[in-house]
Length: 384
Ligand SMILES: Cc1cc2nc3c(=O)[nH]c(=O)nc-3n(C[C@H](O)[C@H](O)[C@H](O)COP(=O)(O)O)c2cc1C
Ligand code: FES
Image (cartoon, rainbow, N blue to C red; front, side, top):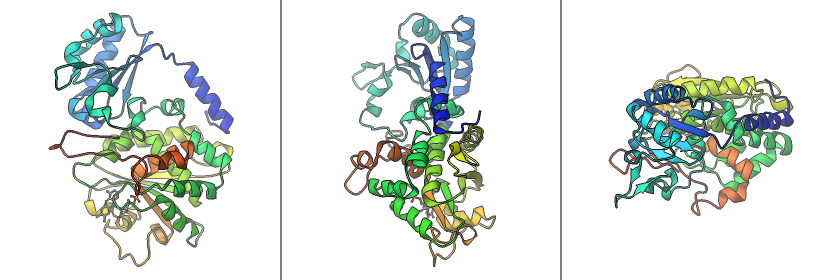
């Protein structure tokens, strides 16, 4: 099970892909928190039963995925390879979908999106809500089961880590992130590469890297959706950052009110550990790195860097006077680099696709994409 080299990872990916038939139907059911609240699990179980009783078990896969971003119309079901998108799917709709779409190749019109002219929209990407979005960080949420590391690996997951560990020095990684001009997604917009450099250059051998998944802003669910729907993307970014900074210990500070994010993250950590993507001698690179999940108690102020580090130390999660930045003196007074969930999730993309690619997206002062989560009085949720 343990992958001991980049070649082992490639072999594993080939094995996963060879066992999958892309021409088979795959019914994906969004199982993010919002769709879960619409009882998406009952819909998923109805598909399991109906597909079994229709004798389609060997021809149709079922996959529970993370949030697609269109929560107000959940539970969302997308049927691949055609990418037929049904909205608001209830258990009682399932037998009609199976007989009409999976067996009969027809459409269940009443479950399709209808645009402002009443025209039906079949494919998810053609729904006006998604049309002007560039879904890069969030894009794989709809394709993978966050509880299955193989889904992430099949789509090239952990390739960026391999590239960083085996083809790049820590300096190269740092330079690439700086050149990409990745700015923190947690609110302050501070350049990530500069902060990493401060922690790396700070005196002391022990350094920490931390994911801020406190997400205290009311109505904000970007970090939750990412951590729930694609936890390995955050984890891979964190390991790459640790390598660049020279850290062997990471923390994810995640709010207690995000049980599904905690569950999926914990599963991801276990699976990554079993595959040798965490722990000692990652992929045979001699780089060691471990991660601990710390659950926050839901105080808004504890999302601030020094308060968050106090909480990780077991103290009251309130801010310290910041005479020295936490990047230099954080957890246990050791240099500690804190970045937001979305900031970390951008890192593997930058390493894989390059700084120029990243810098070609976005505005003059802020590169890359940004996930948005407007409150319920606006158009619903917009993710990019
Ligand atoms: C009161 C307060 C609450 C904050 N809450 C959060 C939060 O919930 N999530 C977050 O990522 N950053 C939060 N921040 C910002 C963090 O202090 C820190 O700047 C950020 O996590 C750094 O990550 P970034 O550079 O990737 O954005 C908060 C700041 C303050 C002052
Ligand atoms: S949780 Fe299903 S679309 Fe957001």
